[in-house]
Image (tube, rainbow, N blue to C red; front, side, top):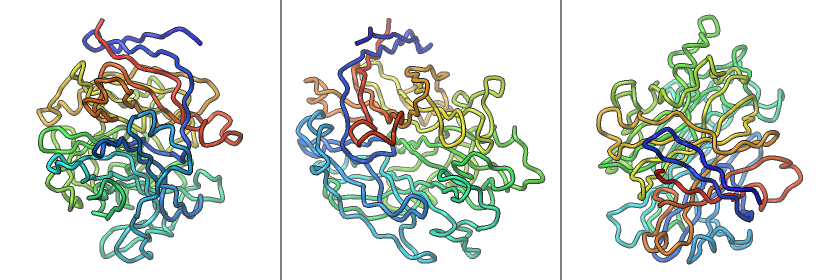
Length: 423
């Protein structure tokens, strides 16, 4: 086993140390952030996918594992996962849930002393087939000039958006509360411009943390900032509007989120829930360093944030991936620090450090990093989750090397313990 690695973050003498450990695997489908919560004395993990998907096929793989310790929950065998009761898909053109959903963040209602009221922020993907354009509402997507997707030239790209579901029984049954953030069809980047085989636009892969009386949602932004037209498309305009962004929604609006969120607009949280905001500048890779427009497929950008409050250092920590090519190719994971507790004051939500690389595996495809608690006495006493951590945590991530030859256990792995400390 190799020696520990220490990496300077560039913030307040904070250092991240990665200590190699014996590999731990996960036995359930995952293609999203790993969300966790304590429900009473049980640690619960929510992972997987549910709903209709014209590209990959319909799925009923959204489940949860539960254990009296963190390790017990993560070690749950596939047959031990529980599929909760979820809303069915509604037919196209009717109200309800459309497309597939992935749970990415669990917010626990602090007003419920039982801990059983949970809000799941979900990543939702649709196609013109599952969410056809409705001229009366502006919702949905037109078929024309739709770009090819992850399955190759014969398939089509999905559009992500972000919604909220609620459970009042600790995650056994869920009801949909509506869409929180989305991009409209007019801002989708289609043919002939789009050649990334990923997304034509949209917002997805959220990680949400409570600060004050708001929930701050960090997410990937992929659309054009104005109505897209191939004749007026500008690479630099697109690049300036994309990457990891943030919006916020009042905690009292989680039961009726549609229209309640506001995106950061470059000065304050004033951009509408379905309009163009401004990404976090420090998390946007400069053109001189290979960064650029998401639609081009060969220009770099960060994505897939996972955010937590570090109780030992009193800073926010974000881990993320980076796309280096089409089809979501990327062989590295990164970490950024925000030293401001109150994300609602001034531009504190924007004050993230330049990301530092913490994992590099040439030839691998790395997605969805997540820092999770250990079973230390302190972690168990404080009931820490992926949203609140101490000095030491475990780094989990999806490793796609040889993905066609491995089972569920080896797709999502924990190879390191992580210490964050001031030197």
